Image (tube, rainbow, N blue to C red; front, side, top):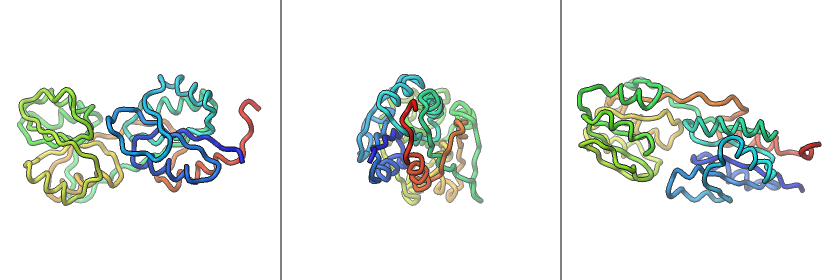
Length: 256
């Protein structure tokens, strides 16, 4: 049996699940690539590499040199640059690409969402009056809120925010999801939060804060998803496993 090689661009819970499901299938060799932005990533269960490739051309070269038969983009919905590079690299290398596109959240009765296009828009949407704000965006975006130092910030991230936010009032929580709605409700209540800033990440792991904000009548500033390349995709792990299994059936030698 010819072993088919799959490179997964990961960093999400689904990418880890996908890698495990594909690695368990005979005839498939899976490598999971992480961007290296998280200092202590969760155990992945398959061979893993960390760090960038040097843009689309670097990734294309990696695909060719290591003879990968399939590229899967299973990165975060907001990793727009990585997704764009993945699509271009697959084209340059002549390697099929699939993407895992986790559906976004949908507003429900009682939600008080303000939709914005980016982090700068979120800062603006908070307004000028001081508020108690829960930032649940990841450490890389937190720095933008130094432009609104009048607010009191509660900031949750997997890794420490470095440097700390340059504002008078900021408190930090280091935690990795999933987060239960009851716990999120208690957190928002304890800190008297009146605004939550979130990305539309989708999935269940971090939805607890959205449900908790709805139950408590708290406003949510929701950052819209960026546009991503149009490539063959699936909304869930099982569907993508089936697509990958189909694509990694018997194929001709490269260059034939």
